[in-house]
Amino acid sequence: MNMKLGSLFDGIGGFPFVGTLLGIDPVWASEIEPWPIKVTEKHFPNMKHLGDITQINGAEIEPVDVITFGSPCQDLSVAGFQSTRPCGARPIVRVDEKPYSVVSIHAPVRGATSAPSN
Image 1 (tube, rainbow, N blue to C red):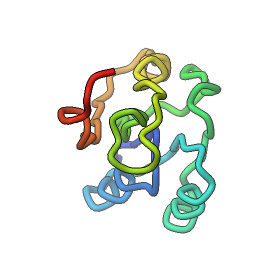
Image 2: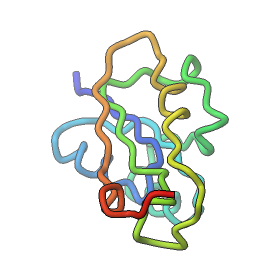
Image 3: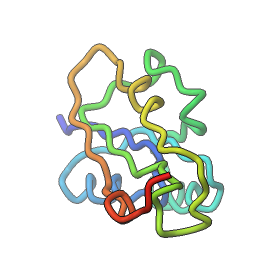
């Protein structure tokens, strides 16, 4: 039985892609941007898209063995507009409160150690 992966702040599905290379099945993802969702729908047609992370109830989603997440820290990102929207760690905890053990893997953000403090 393969391990199962859930991906938060999924982007274009980098973690699900690597998971498949390692024999891990991506079963769901949370992303709100339309273009990245189209990319992952093409590459992972069986992966369920949950949409906005603030609307996900962790008790209602399929249990997974691995939860991955890109950074929602727009204030730290070197891409885009570097908005002042703060890093969103609380939604991760809400989804991660599922009553089972998981491994969480976070994608590092280049600006996390180099961005000026607010």
